[in-house]
Length: 352
Ligand SMILES: *Cc1c(COP(=O)(O)O)cnc(C)c1O
Image (cartoon, rainbow, N blue to C red; front, side, top):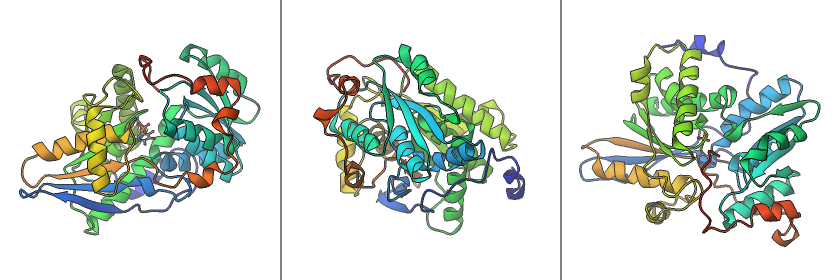
């Protein structure tokens, strides 16, 4: 256990920017006759401009960029990456130029609109047709005063945003706004969210375990990255738990992935319908798969189990960000090819 005062000195980088509005609400959406409860942590509402889980990471990443004297961020992601869009939106608001190397992903309207919204924020988009070309494109996108931010913003600096988020939850538990969760269910993509929560919950003295639902590929690499981040964060926080306890704190479940990253599943479609009934909007790539897992956990849980689903998808309306966005038909050729991939094509066996 780490004293709250002792943690601050270990935090990486600079004082974080405040991009969002905190604490995000917690809501109970379901209770069964056996007192199993499903709660939601509304990180969809981190920002009214563009919310979701990337905002908390960017508070540390942008502060780090400023501290290092960088004025340009270079990052990468899939075509409709929420991380790329969040970086374009919040980076621009804080005076950074943002470039991103983009790789193809299955085409949906959501993906195309995310790309268009990013371009409307001045995103310098660098499309590549395959992952093998990414390193070359990254080098070309660099200029002076550039900070490279990894996929999903999931390095040690960015993940600190979710150590903070766990502390925020602990305060809400103490205030009696929700019961202490037995299990926190969250999406696992690039790993920073789940790893930050797992380390942060332990540091905050909560018993809650994290069930991370894998939606990116390949699973072995996603698992490796998440576990390594968790171990590094635990060390930085001075946590004593050994490897086995760490694995118990953060369990990883790939049973909801389906055909691959960005490919919808039937379980996800059903879960999305249920979510709608609770006033939640979930997406096919990330959160519908996780919500399906959360519903299964609730169904199979012993009496009195408290389940918290951590909602990571922005619920801010995209329309204001699409003002002056290029029409899909007006996309430059490289970008048009990026979103030209058909849904029926086999999934790329890659991570992000
Ligand atoms: C990026 C993202 C995730 C995954 O978070 P990681 O920290 O990359 O694991 C989950 N949900 C949504 C909606 C996201 O955009």
